[in-house]
Length: 240
Ligand code: DX5
Ligand code: ZN
Image 1 (tube, rainbow, N blue to C red):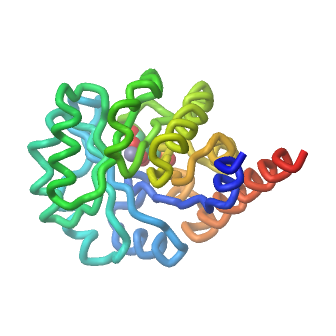
Image 2 (cartoon, rainbow, N blue to C red):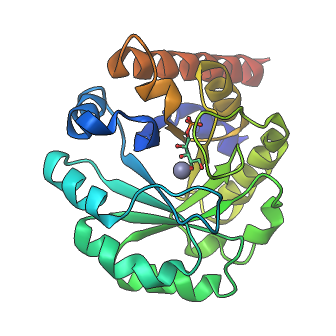
């Protein structure tokens, strides 16, 4: 019961994903997100092998480092992430999200990031069970549950991930309450509400923030308002 009450009090945090930004005015878009209260900036790195798409690299992080004071989190959808940590740290990355999938030496990868003094999170894809986190959770600052298959923005939220999000939340409360639970993919006002009700405390959102015709500020307000509703529902259910 105590854990549930604490969960209600935790305010949701937004991590705008620049994958959906207008790259011709990236600095401006990130500044808008910062003014609108973004928690950190999410940068998606894809190598065309781990996922069927290519995207951004360390030069983008270096440029962003000049225009924002927000932490920059780097989501590495690449094979052999260990080869790139130094480059991204030098560019200005504050944290790394590495996938459980395809990493035969995840513990080593995590220790390497810690030795660089950066925050570390592990990402699990929609088909990957929560149970793979059991042994590694005590070492983590973040867990990211993919709510779409990684590789592209603007996809539909996969609802079958919701029971897993609840399971990860329970594991975190039991083992490492300070670890953040983050969701990535298909987050809009409706799915944000579901994700927060399931236990998420950080939401990555690209299209619903940078693609909103009303602008970044209005989009982030809408997402926050939706998650406040989720919190109220939870409060109601606790009182019942
Ligand atoms: C997908 C990326 C996401 C993506 C989310 O592989 O990891 O961060 O930018 O985009 P939306 O919010 O459009 O689903
Ligand atoms: Zn991402």
